[in-house]
Image (cartoon, rainbow, N blue to C red; front, side, top):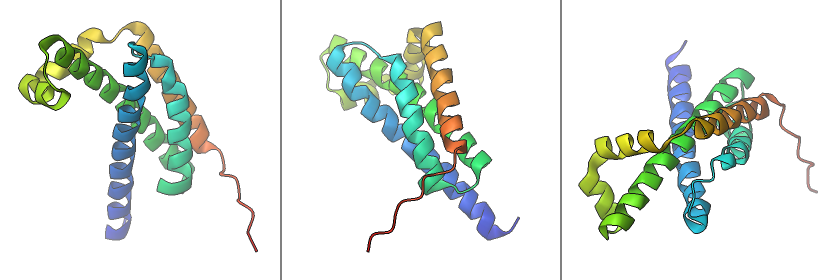
Amino acid sequence: MTVRQIVGECFALCCAVMLGLAAGAVWLLPSVFFHRPLPWLAVPAGWLLGIAMRQWVHGKKWNAALLAALATLIASAYLRVLIAAVNLAAMMGYGLVHAMRTAGASMLLDFARFGTGKLDIAWAVAGMVVAAITALRTPAVSPKLR
């Protein structure tokens, strides 16, 4: 591998992590609105992340599939951490950022782990499978506008 390829792969990995974090933050909005985690949203999130990986992040099928599955896993985990932070902020009467700073990463990760059930993990795995399958598909060719 050349240095250019290594830098390109590292950039694609960075993009997958950032897209996963963004998807988790967007996923938090309906979860807070409906006052429950909504783990089934891992499937549409995985579908969207699979499309994004294949069309804009990585051109190789298998690399895009792995990155899409990783991004979906990150989105699911980040959602659980954010929900733990929201619950903690609501219980303590703090703002979200203040609660996250006060609790720290270790406590938020522990709360997220305690709040994750088997059904949440099953939905996350289903979302990862959907993301990988979507990323393996050849992207549709857009018609040229004249």
